[in-house]
Image (cartoon, rainbow, N blue to C red):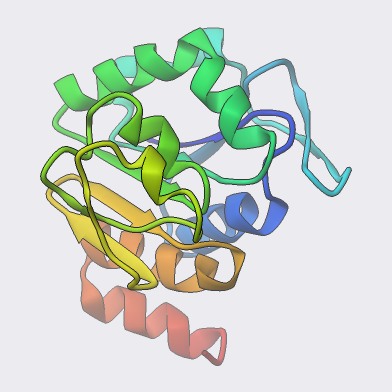
Amino acid sequence: MILVLLADGFEEIEALTPVDMLRRAGLDVKTVGMNGKIACGSHKIPVICDIEPEEVKKEEVSLVIFPGGMPGSLNLDAHPFTDEIIEAVTANGGRLAAICAAPLVLGRRGLLKDKNATCYPGFEKELKGAIPCTDKVVTDGNITTSRGMGTALEFAKELISLLLGKAKADELSAAIMK
């Protein structure tokens, strides 16, 4: 199972583009409302979430996506479930992915140390110990990071490629005329 964590103030495109693309790829993706069944994006768009943190079967999670946005990234960083799910996914041998400002969640926990990583310009100081890159999407080991809203499709394509192979990712890109 793949989780997309939605804390109030999340960037809508960064959250919902991966949900859409990963579901098109046939993957089991759940949105998690960090503070209830409805999460409100940074542009005041409410999203009805699939589940809440207490409903997550942690042993089944293979990938967690942290969308950016402000104050969504800070709200993710401060939520106790964030540490619980990172620990569980790491124990499961899974992947972590963050876009825009959200790589700060991984950086503040020391998870980017000696890894190549990217983020929204200006947040590089939050990538504690990382090797900052300006690429649109960067995968280093089990962590994928991306720069922002304008890179959300490439971010989703990279995740599909990692999970299902490049051919499937290319097939989906062609289907949406990208």
